[in-house]
Length: 463
Figure 1 (cartoon, rainbow, N blue to C red):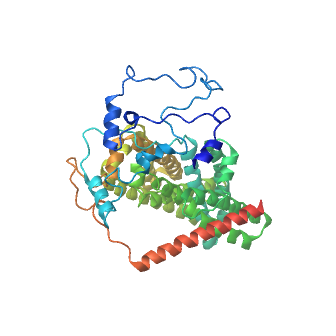
Figure 2: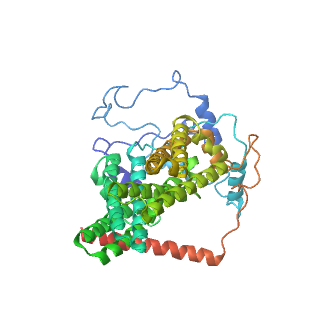
Figure 3: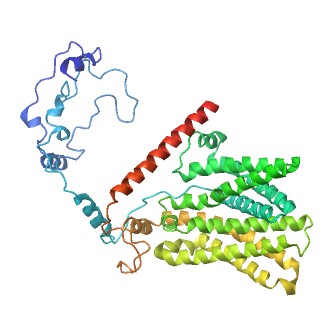
Protein backbone atom coordinates (compact mmCIF):
# COMPACT_ATOMS: atom_id res chain seq x y z
CA UNK A 1 0.00 0.00 0.00
CA UNK A 2 1.55 3.34 -1.02
CA UNK A 3 0.92 6.78 0.48
CA UNK A 4 -1.93 7.49 -1.94
CA UNK A 5 -3.77 4.27 -1.07
CA UNK A 6 -3.24 4.85 2.61
CA UNK A 7 -4.68 8.35 2.32
CA UNK A 8 -7.74 7.13 0.42
CA UNK A 9 -8.38 4.46 3.06
CA UNK A 10 -8.54 7.02 5.87
CA UNK A 11 -11.75 8.40 7.29
CA UNK A 12 -13.21 11.81 6.48
CA UNK A 13 -11.78 13.33 9.63
CA UNK A 14 -8.24 12.52 8.53
CA UNK A 15 -8.46 13.64 4.93
CA UNK A 16 -6.92 17.02 4.36
CA UNK A 17 -5.13 17.03 7.71
CA UNK A 18 -1.41 17.57 7.70
CA UNK A 19 0.81 14.54 8.30
CA UNK A 20 2.26 14.10 11.76
CA UNK A 21 5.54 15.66 12.59
CA UNK A 22 8.65 13.60 12.03
CA UNK A 23 9.62 11.19 14.76
CA UNK A 24 12.55 12.32 16.83
CA UNK A 25 15.56 9.96 16.93
CA UNK A 26 15.09 9.32 20.63
CA UNK A 27 11.50 8.21 19.97
CA UNK A 28 12.50 5.59 17.40
CA UNK A 29 12.32 2.02 18.69
CA UNK A 30 15.71 0.27 18.90
CA UNK A 31 16.81 -1.25 15.60
CA UNK A 32 17.70 -4.70 16.98
CA UNK A 33 15.55 -7.26 18.74
CA UNK A 34 17.92 -7.30 21.72
CA UNK A 35 17.62 -3.55 22.06
CA UNK A 36 13.85 -3.62 21.84
CA UNK A 37 13.63 -6.34 24.47
CA UNK A 38 15.88 -4.35 26.81
CA UNK A 39 13.83 -1.21 26.31
CA UNK A 40 10.53 -2.98 26.89
CA UNK A 41 11.70 -4.68 30.06
CA UNK A 42 13.26 -1.49 31.38
CA UNK A 43 10.04 0.52 31.05
CA UNK A 44 7.14 -1.81 31.76
CA UNK A 45 5.66 -0.19 34.83
CA UNK A 46 2.17 1.31 34.82
CA UNK A 47 3.34 4.09 37.14
CA UNK A 48 5.90 5.40 34.63
CA UNK A 49 4.12 4.70 31.35
CA UNK A 50 1.22 6.70 29.96
CA UNK A 51 -1.64 4.20 29.84
CA UNK A 52 -4.37 6.71 29.05
CA UNK A 53 -6.51 5.21 26.23
CA UNK A 54 -6.59 7.09 22.96
CA UNK A 55 -10.39 6.76 22.73
CA UNK A 56 -12.84 6.40 25.60
CA UNK A 57 -12.16 5.50 29.21
CA UNK A 58 -11.23 2.17 30.79
CA UNK A 59 -14.26 -0.04 31.36
CA UNK A 60 -16.61 2.19 29.39
CA UNK A 61 -18.01 1.82 25.87
CA UNK A 62 -15.87 3.41 23.20
CA UNK A 63 -17.11 6.56 21.54
CA UNK A 64 -18.05 6.53 17.87
CA UNK A 65 -15.98 9.67 17.24
CA UNK A 66 -12.41 10.62 17.90
CA UNK A 67 -11.52 12.19 21.20
CA UNK A 68 -9.66 14.97 19.31
CA UNK A 69 -10.72 15.91 15.81
CA UNK A 70 -8.00 15.23 13.23
CA UNK A 71 -5.79 13.46 15.74
CA UNK A 72 -3.21 10.94 14.57
CA UNK A 73 -1.78 7.95 16.39
CA UNK A 74 1.56 8.87 17.91
CA UNK A 75 4.62 7.42 16.16
CA UNK A 76 2.43 5.87 13.44
CA UNK A 77 3.40 6.54 9.83
CA UNK A 78 1.29 6.46 6.72
CA UNK A 79 1.81 4.00 3.90
CA UNK A 80 3.17 1.31 6.21
CA UNK A 81 6.12 3.50 7.07
CA UNK A 82 6.46 1.63 10.36
CA UNK A 83 7.76 -1.34 8.40
CA UNK A 84 11.02 0.49 7.88
CA UNK A 85 12.11 -0.42 11.39
CA UNK A 86 9.86 -3.43 12.12
CA UNK A 87 11.87 -6.58 12.74
CA UNK A 88 9.23 -8.58 10.85
CA UNK A 89 10.43 -7.06 7.59
CA UNK A 90 14.18 -6.87 8.23
CA UNK A 91 16.59 -9.64 7.27
CA UNK A 92 19.68 -8.08 8.86
CA UNK A 93 18.11 -7.88 12.31
CA UNK A 94 18.20 -11.56 13.34
CA UNK A 95 20.93 -14.13 13.19
CA UNK A 96 18.75 -16.92 11.79
CA UNK A 97 17.02 -15.10 8.94
CA UNK A 98 19.61 -16.01 6.30
CA UNK A 99 20.64 -19.41 7.70
CA UNK A 100 19.30 -22.57 6.05
CA UNK A 101 19.54 -25.85 8.02
CA UNK A 102 21.55 -28.68 6.57
CA UNK A 103 19.94 -31.97 5.55
CA UNK A 104 18.84 -33.89 8.62
CA UNK A 105 19.70 -31.09 11.06
CA UNK A 106 16.09 -30.34 12.01
CA UNK A 107 15.24 -34.04 12.43
CA UNK A 108 18.31 -34.52 14.63
CA UNK A 109 17.29 -31.57 16.82
CA UNK A 110 13.79 -33.02 17.18
CA UNK A 111 15.21 -36.39 18.20
CA UNK A 112 17.43 -34.77 20.80
CA UNK A 113 14.42 -32.91 22.19
CA UNK A 114 12.33 -36.06 22.45
CA UNK A 115 15.15 -38.00 24.06
CA UNK A 116 15.79 -35.34 26.69
CA UNK A 117 14.98 -36.23 30.28
CA UNK A 118 11.65 -35.08 31.61
CA UNK A 119 11.70 -31.98 33.80
CA UNK A 120 11.00 -32.45 37.52
CA UNK A 121 7.60 -30.83 37.12
CA UNK A 122 5.49 -31.36 34.01
CA UNK A 123 3.21 -28.40 33.38
CA UNK A 124 -0.06 -29.39 31.71
CA UNK A 125 -2.61 -30.01 30.51
CA UNK A 126 -1.37 -30.79 27.01
CA UNK A 127 -4.49 -32.40 25.54
CA UNK A 128 -8.17 -32.32 26.41
CA UNK A 129 -9.83 -35.55 27.56
CA UNK A 130 -12.71 -36.92 25.48
CA UNK A 131 -16.09 -35.41 26.25
CA UNK A 132 -18.06 -38.57 25.47
CA UNK A 133 -20.83 -39.47 27.89
CA UNK A 134 -22.72 -42.72 28.43
CA UNK A 135 -24.15 -42.81 24.89
CA UNK A 136 -20.87 -43.61 23.13
CA UNK A 137 -19.77 -46.73 25.06
CA UNK A 138 -23.34 -48.01 24.84
CA UNK A 139 -23.20 -47.45 21.08
CA UNK A 140 -19.90 -49.34 20.94
CA UNK A 141 -21.52 -52.26 22.78
CA UNK A 142 -24.69 -52.41 20.67
CA UNK A 143 -22.72 -52.03 17.44
CA UNK A 144 -20.50 -54.91 18.50
CA UNK A 145 -23.50 -57.14 19.22
CA UNK A 146 -24.98 -56.28 15.83
CA UNK A 147 -21.76 -57.07 13.97
CA UNK A 148 -21.29 -60.32 15.92
CA UNK A 149 -24.89 -61.36 15.16
CA UNK A 150 -24.24 -60.76 11.45
CA UNK A 151 -21.29 -63.17 11.66
CA UNK A 152 -23.57 -65.75 13.27
CA UNK A 153 -26.21 -65.28 10.58
CA UNK A 154 -23.65 -65.88 7.83
CA UNK A 155 -22.34 -68.99 9.59
CA UNK A 156 -25.87 -70.36 10.00
CA UNK A 157 -26.56 -69.77 6.30
CA UNK A 158 -23.40 -71.64 5.38
CA UNK A 159 -24.36 -74.49 7.74
CA UNK A 160 -27.89 -74.68 6.29
CA UNK A 161 -29.74 -73.56 9.43
CA UNK A 162 -32.02 -70.99 7.79
CA UNK A 163 -34.26 -70.50 10.82
CA UNK A 164 -31.35 -69.56 13.08
CA UNK A 165 -29.94 -67.31 10.34
CA UNK A 166 -33.24 -65.42 10.12
CA UNK A 167 -33.33 -64.93 13.90
CA UNK A 168 -29.68 -63.80 13.97
CA UNK A 169 -30.41 -61.17 11.32
CA UNK A 170 -33.32 -59.87 13.38
CA UNK A 171 -31.10 -59.69 16.46
CA UNK A 172 -28.58 -57.66 14.47
CA UNK A 173 -31.29 -55.31 13.23
CA UNK A 174 -32.77 -54.85 16.69
CA UNK A 175 -29.42 -54.02 18.29
CA UNK A 176 -28.21 -51.68 15.55
CA UNK A 177 -31.48 -49.71 15.41
CA UNK A 178 -30.72 -47.55 18.51
CA UNK A 179 -27.16 -46.80 17.33
CA UNK A 180 -28.00 -43.69 15.23
CA UNK A 181 -30.16 -42.35 18.05
CA UNK A 182 -27.28 -42.71 20.51
CA UNK A 183 -24.90 -40.93 18.14
CA UNK A 184 -27.38 -38.12 17.60
CA UNK A 185 -27.91 -37.83 21.36
CA UNK A 186 -24.16 -37.44 21.84
CA UNK A 187 -23.76 -34.98 18.96
CA UNK A 188 -26.70 -32.85 20.07
CA UNK A 189 -28.84 -32.66 16.93
CA UNK A 190 -29.53 -34.85 13.86
CA UNK A 191 -27.91 -32.41 11.42
CA UNK A 192 -24.48 -33.14 12.84
CA UNK A 193 -24.86 -36.86 12.16
CA UNK A 194 -26.09 -36.18 8.63
CA UNK A 195 -23.17 -33.81 8.04
CA UNK A 196 -20.77 -36.73 8.53
CA UNK A 197 -22.33 -38.32 5.44
CA UNK A 198 -21.72 -35.28 3.25
CA UNK A 199 -18.19 -36.47 2.47
CA UNK A 200 -16.41 -39.78 2.07
CA UNK A 201 -12.93 -40.00 3.62
CA UNK A 202 -11.40 -43.50 3.49
CA UNK A 203 -8.56 -42.42 5.80
CA UNK A 204 -10.94 -41.27 8.56
CA UNK A 205 -12.18 -44.06 10.90
CA UNK A 206 -14.98 -41.80 12.16
CA UNK A 207 -16.24 -40.94 8.68
CA UNK A 208 -16.03 -44.54 7.47
CA UNK A 209 -17.71 -45.65 10.69
CA UNK A 210 -20.72 -43.43 9.96
CA UNK A 211 -20.94 -44.81 6.43
CA UNK A 212 -20.52 -48.39 7.72
CA UNK A 213 -23.35 -47.87 10.20
CA UNK A 214 -25.69 -46.66 7.45
CA UNK A 215 -24.64 -49.40 5.01
CA UNK A 216 -24.89 -52.12 7.67
CA UNK A 217 -28.36 -51.01 8.76
CA UNK A 218 -29.59 -50.76 5.17
CA UNK A 219 -28.24 -54.16 4.09
CA UNK A 220 -29.45 -55.84 7.27
CA UNK A 221 -32.92 -54.33 6.95
CA UNK A 222 -33.03 -55.54 3.35
CA UNK A 223 -32.05 -59.05 4.46
CA UNK A 224 -34.78 -59.10 7.12
CA UNK A 225 -37.29 -57.83 4.56
CA UNK A 226 -36.26 -60.59 2.13
CA UNK A 227 -36.77 -63.13 4.92
CA UNK A 228 -40.29 -61.86 5.48
CA UNK A 229 -41.03 -62.07 1.74
CA UNK A 230 -39.60 -65.56 1.48
CA UNK A 231 -36.75 -64.52 -0.84
CA UNK A 232 -34.10 -66.86 0.56
CA UNK A 233 -31.45 -66.23 -2.07
CA UNK A 234 -31.71 -62.47 -1.70
CA UNK A 235 -31.70 -62.78 2.08
CA UNK A 236 -28.52 -64.84 2.02
CA UNK A 237 -26.80 -62.43 -0.35
CA UNK A 238 -27.75 -59.40 1.71
CA UNK A 239 -26.81 -61.27 4.89
CA UNK A 240 -23.34 -61.95 3.47
CA UNK A 241 -22.94 -58.26 2.61
CA UNK A 242 -24.08 -57.34 6.12
CA UNK A 243 -21.46 -59.62 7.68
CA UNK A 244 -18.78 -58.13 5.45
CA UNK A 245 -19.67 -54.60 6.54
CA UNK A 246 -20.06 -55.83 10.11
CA UNK A 247 -16.39 -56.75 10.17
CA UNK A 248 -15.58 -53.06 9.91
CA UNK A 249 -18.45 -51.93 12.15
CA UNK A 250 -17.20 -54.15 14.97
CA UNK A 251 -13.55 -53.09 14.68
CA UNK A 252 -13.58 -49.43 13.65
CA UNK A 253 -14.48 -48.25 17.15
CA UNK A 254 -11.21 -49.65 18.49
CA UNK A 255 -9.29 -48.22 15.53
CA UNK A 256 -10.96 -44.85 16.12
CA UNK A 257 -9.78 -44.78 19.74
CA UNK A 258 -6.25 -45.81 18.74
CA UNK A 259 -6.07 -42.98 16.17
CA UNK A 260 -6.24 -40.30 18.89
CA UNK A 261 -3.49 -38.67 20.98
CA UNK A 262 -4.73 -40.27 24.22
CA UNK A 263 -1.71 -42.24 25.54
CA UNK A 264 -3.61 -45.38 26.57
CA UNK A 265 -5.51 -45.67 23.30
CA UNK A 266 -2.62 -44.65 21.06
CA UNK A 267 -0.24 -47.20 22.62
CA UNK A 268 -2.89 -49.94 22.23
CA UNK A 269 -3.24 -49.36 18.48
CA UNK A 270 -1.91 -52.78 17.46
CA UNK A 271 -4.38 -54.79 19.54
CA UNK A 272 -7.33 -52.52 20.27
CA UNK A 273 -9.10 -53.29 16.99
CA UNK A 274 -8.78 -57.11 17.39
CA UNK A 275 -9.85 -56.83 21.04
CA UNK A 276 -13.03 -55.03 20.02
CA UNK A 277 -13.73 -57.60 17.27
CA UNK A 278 -13.32 -60.47 19.74
CA UNK A 279 -15.71 -58.85 22.21
CA UNK A 280 -18.19 -58.12 19.43
CA UNK A 281 -18.12 -61.74 18.27
CA UNK A 282 -18.65 -63.06 21.79
CA UNK A 283 -21.50 -60.70 22.66
CA UNK A 284 -23.18 -61.19 19.27
CA UNK A 285 -23.06 -64.96 19.65
CA UNK A 286 -24.35 -64.73 23.24
CA UNK A 287 -27.26 -62.45 22.28
CA UNK A 288 -28.22 -64.69 19.36
CA UNK A 289 -27.97 -67.83 21.46
CA UNK A 290 -30.20 -66.43 24.21
CA UNK A 291 -32.74 -65.33 21.58
CA UNK A 292 -32.75 -68.80 20.01
CA UNK A 293 -33.30 -70.33 23.42
CA UNK A 294 -36.20 -67.94 24.03
CA UNK A 295 -37.92 -68.90 20.75
CA UNK A 296 -37.70 -72.62 21.58
CA UNK A 297 -34.56 -74.00 19.92
CA UNK A 298 -34.02 -77.51 21.36
CA UNK A 299 -31.39 -78.03 24.03
CA UNK A 300 -29.17 -80.37 22.03
CA UNK A 301 -29.46 -78.50 18.75
CA UNK A 302 -26.06 -78.19 17.00
CA UNK A 303 -26.46 -74.41 16.58
CA UNK A 304 -26.84 -73.90 20.32
CA UNK A 305 -23.69 -75.90 21.03
CA UNK A 306 -21.76 -74.15 18.28
CA UNK A 307 -22.78 -70.70 19.52
CA UNK A 308 -21.75 -71.62 23.06
CA UNK A 309 -18.33 -72.68 21.84
CA UNK A 310 -18.03 -69.55 19.68
CA UNK A 311 -18.80 -67.09 22.47
CA UNK A 312 -16.50 -68.89 24.89
CA UNK A 313 -13.64 -69.02 22.40
CA UNK A 314 -14.09 -65.34 21.46
CA UNK A 315 -14.02 -64.31 25.11
CA UNK A 316 -10.86 -66.33 25.71
CA UNK A 317 -9.28 -64.55 22.75
CA UNK A 318 -10.39 -61.20 24.16
CA UNK A 319 -8.86 -61.95 27.56
CA UNK A 320 -5.63 -63.18 25.99
CA UNK A 321 -5.26 -60.11 23.76
CA UNK A 322 -6.08 -57.80 26.69
CA UNK A 323 -3.42 -59.42 28.89
CA UNK A 324 -0.86 -59.13 26.08
CA UNK A 325 -1.79 -55.48 25.53
CA UNK A 326 -1.45 -54.66 29.23
CA UNK A 327 2.05 -56.17 29.31
CA UNK A 328 3.05 -53.86 26.45
CA UNK A 329 1.60 -50.70 27.96
CA UNK A 330 3.90 -50.22 30.99
CA UNK A 331 3.18 -46.66 32.25
CA UNK A 332 0.19 -46.18 29.95
CA UNK A 333 -1.62 -49.11 31.57
CA UNK A 334 -1.89 -47.35 34.94
CA UNK A 335 -5.15 -45.75 33.82
CA UNK A 336 -6.71 -49.22 33.51
CA UNK A 337 -6.09 -50.20 37.12
CA UNK A 338 -6.97 -47.08 39.09
CA UNK A 339 -10.20 -45.30 39.98
CA UNK A 340 -13.43 -45.82 38.11
CA UNK A 341 -11.80 -47.41 35.01
CA UNK A 342 -10.08 -49.98 37.22
CA UNK A 343 -13.40 -50.84 38.86
CA UNK A 344 -15.08 -51.26 35.48
CA UNK A 345 -12.31 -53.50 34.16
CA UNK A 346 -12.53 -55.58 37.34
CA UNK A 347 -16.29 -55.94 36.92
CA UNK A 348 -15.87 -56.99 33.30
CA UNK A 349 -13.17 -59.56 34.05
CA UNK A 350 -15.14 -60.96 36.97
CA UNK A 351 -18.24 -61.35 34.82
CA UNK A 352 -16.33 -63.02 31.98
CA UNK A 353 -14.35 -65.41 34.20
CA UNK A 354 -17.53 -66.36 36.07
CA UNK A 355 -19.21 -67.05 32.74
CA UNK A 356 -16.28 -69.22 31.68
CA UNK A 357 -16.49 -71.16 34.93
CA UNK A 358 -20.22 -71.72 34.49
CA UNK A 359 -19.64 -72.83 30.92
CA UNK A 360 -17.14 -75.47 32.05
CA UNK A 361 -19.49 -76.60 34.82
CA UNK A 362 -22.66 -76.59 32.78
CA UNK A 363 -23.23 -80.34 32.95
CA UNK A 364 -23.61 -80.62 36.75
CA UNK A 365 -25.51 -77.31 36.92
CA UNK A 366 -27.72 -77.88 33.87
CA UNK A 367 -28.60 -75.66 30.86
CA UNK A 368 -29.48 -72.73 33.12
CA UNK A 369 -25.79 -72.23 33.90
CA UNK A 370 -25.12 -71.95 30.18
CA UNK A 371 -27.72 -69.22 29.86
CA UNK A 372 -26.32 -67.32 32.85
CA UNK A 373 -22.86 -67.58 31.29
CA UNK A 374 -24.11 -65.98 28.07
CA UNK A 375 -25.71 -63.18 30.08
CA UNK A 376 -22.45 -62.63 31.96
CA UNK A 377 -20.58 -62.39 28.65
CA UNK A 378 -22.96 -59.62 27.57
CA UNK A 379 -22.53 -57.80 30.89
CA UNK A 380 -18.75 -58.17 30.71
CA UNK A 381 -18.65 -56.80 27.18
CA UNK A 382 -20.66 -53.75 28.27
CA UNK A 383 -18.33 -53.15 31.24
CA UNK A 384 -15.29 -53.41 28.97
CA UNK A 385 -16.67 -50.77 26.60
CA UNK A 386 -17.33 -48.31 29.42
CA UNK A 387 -13.96 -49.13 31.00
CA UNK A 388 -12.01 -48.36 27.82
CA UNK A 389 -13.71 -44.99 27.40
CA UNK A 390 -13.27 -43.98 31.05
CA UNK A 391 -9.65 -45.15 31.06
CA UNK A 392 -8.98 -43.01 28.00
CA UNK A 393 -10.30 -39.95 29.81
CA UNK A 394 -8.06 -40.66 32.80
CA UNK A 395 -5.05 -41.23 30.55
CA UNK A 396 -5.57 -37.90 28.77
CA UNK A 397 -5.53 -36.11 32.13
CA UNK A 398 -2.17 -37.69 33.07
CA UNK A 399 0.27 -34.99 31.94
CA UNK A 400 3.30 -37.16 32.69
CA UNK A 401 2.03 -39.92 30.37
CA UNK A 402 1.38 -37.40 27.61
CA UNK A 403 4.91 -36.02 28.00
CA UNK A 404 6.40 -39.52 27.98
CA UNK A 405 4.46 -40.43 24.86
CA UNK A 406 5.82 -37.35 23.08
CA UNK A 407 9.33 -38.62 23.81
CA UNK A 408 8.53 -42.19 22.81
CA UNK A 409 9.30 -43.55 26.27
CA UNK A 410 5.79 -44.17 27.60
CA UNK A 411 5.82 -47.94 27.01
CA UNK A 412 9.58 -48.58 26.91
CA UNK A 413 11.18 -47.00 29.98
CA UNK A 414 11.71 -47.91 33.58
CA UNK A 415 11.43 -45.70 36.64
CA UNK A 416 14.85 -44.20 36.05
CA UNK A 417 13.93 -43.11 32.54
CA UNK A 418 16.29 -45.56 30.79
CA UNK A 419 14.94 -47.39 27.73
CA UNK A 420 14.03 -51.03 28.27
CA UNK A 421 15.03 -53.61 25.70
CA UNK A 422 12.35 -54.77 23.30
CA UNK A 423 10.74 -51.39 22.66
CA UNK A 424 11.21 -48.97 19.78
CA UNK A 425 12.42 -45.50 20.69
CA UNK A 426 11.34 -42.79 18.24
CA UNK A 427 14.57 -40.89 19.01
CA UNK A 428 16.53 -43.27 16.80
CA UNK A 429 17.09 -42.27 13.20
CA UNK A 430 14.73 -43.84 10.68
CA UNK A 431 15.61 -44.90 7.20
CA UNK A 432 13.91 -42.95 4.43
CA UNK A 433 11.47 -44.84 2.24
CA UNK A 434 12.74 -46.32 -0.97
CA UNK A 435 11.78 -44.38 -4.12
CA UNK A 436 9.42 -47.15 -5.18
CA UNK A 437 7.62 -47.12 -1.82
CA UNK A 438 7.30 -43.34 -1.90
CA UNK A 439 5.77 -43.57 -5.35
CA UNK A 440 3.38 -46.30 -4.24
CA UNK A 441 2.33 -44.37 -1.15
CA UNK A 442 1.78 -41.23 -3.19
CA UNK A 443 -0.30 -43.13 -5.75
CA UNK A 444 -2.43 -44.64 -2.98
CA UNK A 445 -3.02 -41.24 -1.37
CA UNK A 446 -3.97 -39.72 -4.73
CA UNK A 447 -6.35 -42.60 -5.50
CA UNK A 448 -8.05 -42.18 -2.13
CA UNK A 449 -8.35 -38.44 -2.67
CA UNK A 450 -9.96 -38.85 -6.07
CA UNK A 451 -12.30 -41.56 -4.78
CA UNK A 452 -13.40 -39.33 -1.92
CA UNK A 453 -14.13 -36.45 -4.30
CA UNK A 454 -16.11 -38.68 -6.70
CA UNK A 455 -18.26 -40.09 -3.90
CA UNK A 456 -18.82 -36.64 -2.42
CA UNK A 457 -19.99 -35.29 -5.79
CA UNK A 458 -22.31 -38.27 -6.25
CA UNK A 459 -23.82 -37.69 -2.81
CA UNK A 460 -24.39 -34.01 -3.59
CA UNK A 461 -26.13 -34.81 -6.88
CA UNK A 462 -28.38 -37.32 -5.17
CA UNK A 463 -29.67 -34.84 -2.59
